[in-house]
Image (cartoon, rainbow, N blue to C red):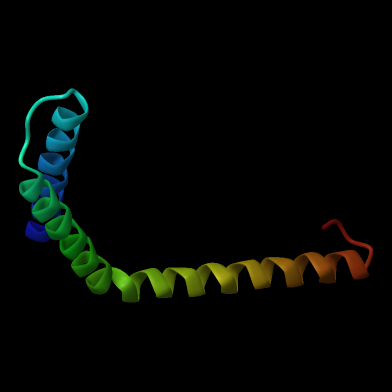
Length: 82
């Protein structure tokens, strides 16, 4: 959970700095670049930790859809409701 909190805090800082830039307020471009890099690294770290669960969920979804399609095809071929 700490990694998620850290990523969220970095994103918030980056967005606040970007908004200040858009409003024409002076800001340090190096800080904005560093925050952007830190956000990218934090999100990449989160993706690598959660990647296995996402793959399993996708696989389960694909299996579910295949069963649903097979059931629908079987129902249509025997004249039953689909």
